Image (cartoon, rainbow, N blue to C red; front, top):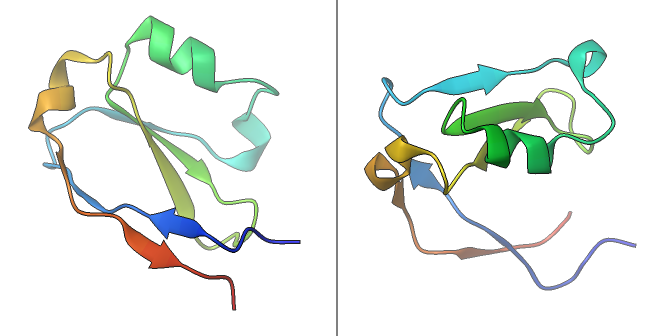
Length: 80
């Protein structure tokens, strides 16, 4: 069952902000904690488990470029 009270948050991320893009074959089983701790990039782009043509972008608040990312207000999200 999908959550009923989901939100989606968009962000304006300048093109020069660092990012790492991973494809499914390159995904380790656990990645979030090491991504944040290593601070190699501000963004980690991962394939969506729900929609293979979409991506999820993880934002690292510990990275020095984090301050350049402008978050937009959250919007309600409902699975169709």
